[in-house]
Image 1 (cartoon, rainbow, N blue to C red):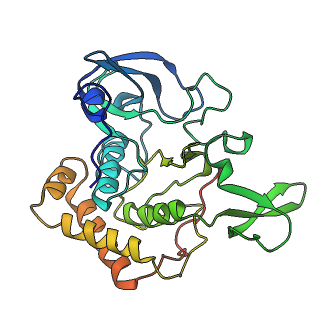
Image 2: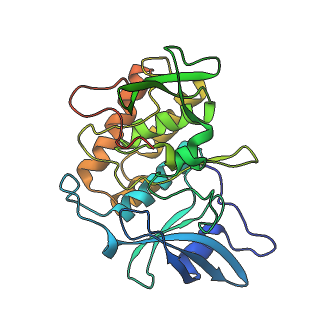
Length: 290
């Protein structure tokens, strides 16, 4: 499990600063569907940009009556770490100016810049977020280095082929989304950085007991899992054992049936040895897709 990045030159981790630092808010992200604030967590002379989502600002969801979006966001971070991956930014539960909520390290450019990723993914086609990993192409073939998702309506009777990059980072993320049963993997939730790292945000609509997987990353549907992905799933399976530190932590964040469903999905993926395919009982692609 990768350790949280340390902030030089002190001894505090990113998680320490997020959880214990003084939370100073600079403003609210107007594009987000729930209350989302941008600010900084400060402790011991360290200042870390972050996003804060208070539970009090969450809109009720009829199909997620238990728990909170904030708790599921933290659970997704813990599961990602248990897989040995680090594409979910460090995320904690803490109290803040508007009450308890999720606090997550901000990744990418600050939100006052035009190329900053919108929290709800609306800026992807404008050059932010996952635009470098997703595109619309004419014709019926995705082209070298790309995977087809499906036809997209552009209006006026026009359609184009929606594709995503044939990228190992995305392939791992596709497996992660299947494990957490992500119901809203949009393009704007992908944040590739110039140094080659990629982050994925917004995991509040996940970990349901029913199959609710909705994603743009269907390009590997039905194909065998890469060896490193299968190894990560086996690692997660072991760490989800009853009474383990991860299981005890997740029990604080999601319900017992949700934890059991997480174990079952992990075992089912391992047994199948393949990326899942879209089912027929739930829309396979989120809307809007970006």
